[in-house]
Image: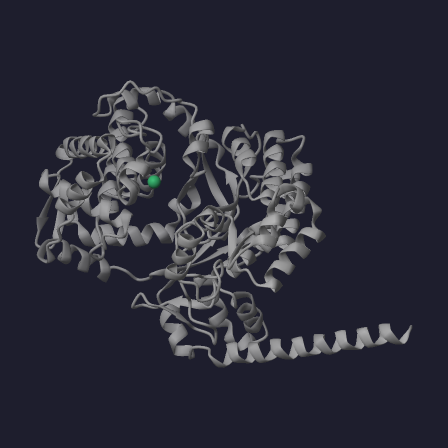
Length: 591
Ligand SMILES: [Zn+2]
């Protein structure tokens, strides 16, 4: 060994040991700032344990092997998600792993997806010695504000689209950040090829730089790419369409462009028992601009019997479209890619008790390929989750309605809510997209339309014999349960706001009446109440007038403490848990 190399090596060792010491100090600080056991216990007492067992015998041997590859990919994307949320998330998890006496904190970390807890007072605070959460999360520079970024966009409008693209992190354009991004392109030539012009943009960046997720998380994305390809190789024979989707999605992740995989996902006819939602789609976690997507991964097992029944009942969806209360000659495809699944495991942003998804979000993709609908049956019918909804329903209703609410009602109402997104008005009368025309009120109206189409379709399905009396009653009861609120909604909560509108409309139309702090359902008035509100919503969408839509929202969101407040209080008092800790047999976890 020559002397120079020796010096290089020993200084590298020195740097390493300084790094290790810094890690240890950081870990001590994380542990030193931990909540007391009683603080953790207060949340644990309000946390429901939800276990998702595997459906025995549902997968063929090749699918089981592929599932193992996909679960490994999911675990890895879960870590990326934690990093996106908080810069110290993984360090905090590692620190907890070295302190088995803090098992309660580790469980809380799982419930909260990181070191920041939502308290019982609905505040977001660190429960370990880490930095406070900021709206920038870990996808904009630390401490970034809208004011600073808006000022940058005003001076450099040409950088806005790239910096606010959905699948990149924004960093300060420091020489070190740029050097690192370019080093990643050097180390991963595929990324260089798949991002034409990126190298030049990195070099010329002023103040801020957009680093694509595939570059920012290059090692993780490569790992996931390999797992998806390994799973695809195992499924080539038994489920070629799903294998093709997995390969394309692997490439999508390297390119940060999902069009190819989305097309294969939505239009592919998978012949096996697996499906998977893979990648970063939803923007809910971006509190700064609402544009950055966060990673999720769901591995799903097809519920063949329920999927077949659903496909059969969708059969003549054009008849339902034609019956909707609006002027239209819209033709809809009855070939909607909808399936009923049991969740094997959810990762990243999907973790929790999501009941259904409909993707992709981009309207140009939806127009070209449609959207795939994934109904999660083992969440919708989970006994403990159902029990919580039932307690709320029973608390809000007069005693006679006790038996009306069943888990089947929730399943079919949700399913037809998702189908409802396919029906009715899809553009304003003047041709504008609804999001462009109605802006911040577009989501609220679209979700209300889907709720009401579901209830409207229930009657049609009952008339043609697809729903028996008991199922119709259960769907109707869940339609009421769905709109009742435990607290008065804020106007910035689209779901809760549109539910309150329905609650008020149903009162106005005599579908609901109040009796000493509880509600009675007059089922004979159901159809009229649903149809008139649906007609109003479809007209607001077709008119595409944001001012008019907001007037309507203001008019129908009144809250009477003596009526709404009393029902809300009864429902709150029925609440035994507020958070959920989900465990998965597929990951070797026990209840
Ligand atoms: Zn929806």
